[in-house]
Image (tube, rainbow over the protein chains, first blue to last red):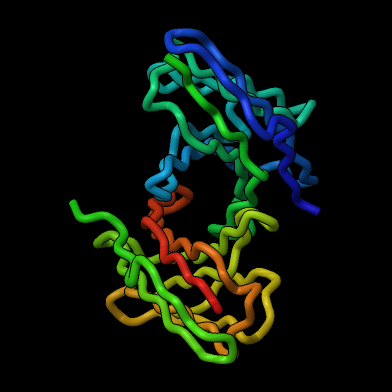
Length: 115
Length: 110
């Protein structure tokens, strides 16, 4: 079964500090993509960062970076210099290439950035 | 460029009725996927359409159906609505593995 586990239902961080959101996943496939999505109160899911499983180098996008540990099936998201606008629900997800465009999501982590 | 447009934004229906939701993808995107989001079950994949054909289907009852038109616009239909169908329904269009989501349709069944 393909599953994604986000073990932190809620997290808080002070503005300008760094926070790490955890994600583990389970699949027997070898060729897949991993994603972090952000869903603010506006409801629209926004892609934060993605990682291709065959790439060993961790992806980065400005203040967002991941720690991808393929053997451990772990894919954590680090947000540096947290901003109030980062307050949102964050979802970890993966997509297996052979299965087409189907995302499997975790339950999400609510992140609150405090001033 | 225009994003993914879902209509309507909000909908209230009575149990037993049927409902149709619409999704207009980004121009040039031929794949459209639908997801149901509820507090209890989270985000669950409903189905994916590509070039008017259903390419992938999630584990939902036959009351949930969809279609895609030649202009890539997609509709999903839920018949014989149940209270448990109350959810946010998200549509996403994609070019390869990169999704762009719409803002969703909030369906409330009373």
